Image 1: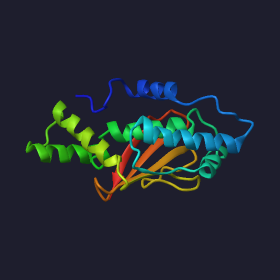
Image 2 (image 1 turned 180 degrees about the vertical axis):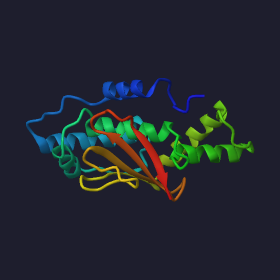
Image 3 (image 1 turned 60 degrees about the vertical axis):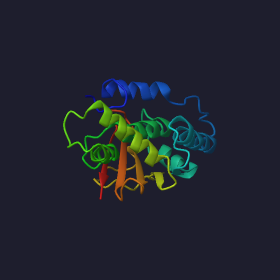
Length: 191
C-alpha cells in the first residue's frame, strides 16, 4: 500500500502543490506580500486542512526575512502546504507523526505491526493524526533564516517547519521543504 493519503508519485505531489498554491502576490509591496502569505498559511492550516485549534507561529517578519534570504521555486504558502501534507502522508521516518499514529492504530486494533500496512489501519492512523493536529496542544512554527532543524537542514535554502503535537507525543517534528523544489518535501520526528 502506498503510504500517501493520496495517489501519485512524489514529483506529482510537488506539481500538485505548485498548482494549488496561492499566486498573484504584489511584489512591489514586500511587507504586504509577507502579510498576505502569512494569512494564506494560516488559512491552509485552519480551513484547508481543518486544524483550526492548532497554534500557528508564522509571522510576516519571518516570512520577509526568508523571502530576502534567497529565491526559490516554492514560496512559503506552497512550502507550508507541502510540509503539512508530508506530515499527514509520509511515514518513512519511524518517528514521523504518521508513523507514531500508525503504531497507535495498530495498538488500538490489537494487531501486530505489519508491512504493508493494511488500509483500515492506515485510515485509522490518518484519523488519529488529523484529530491530534486539530488540537490546542499542537503548534506549527516556521523557522527564521539562520536556524536549522534537528538534522542540520538550514532555514534559508529550505523552508523549515517545527511542529509539536503534545496529544500525540513529546517528539518535535520537522517538515523540510527545499526552496528550489529539487529535493521532495520530507519530515521526521526527534525525541
